[in-house]
Length: 124
Image (cartoon, rainbow, N blue to C red; front, side, top):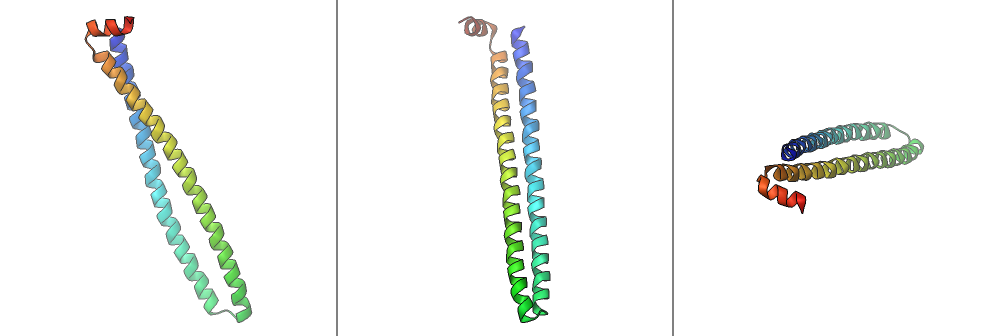
């Protein structure tokens, strides 16, 4: 009877681990989409700033150059922070999913042992 519950618990843990892996893949997909969108937006902003710079006076160009550099640095820092946070979240999900799947598999194996071997292992 205990073996049946071990198998059932193992299947449940495997399922939960798989669901967490799906969530991790989902996060990866959306992160990649966000990175592509960020790059498009950044290219558009740089193009717009270049257009503004070509029609500006010399005094204003210096200001626009400094302003552009500051905006680029802030955008890079923000993107890097988001990227690191996403990687940290994905790593946690992956590690937890791995532990659940391995534990679930071991429980299923224990549930599939012949009863004579299982009684020796569980008693000893």
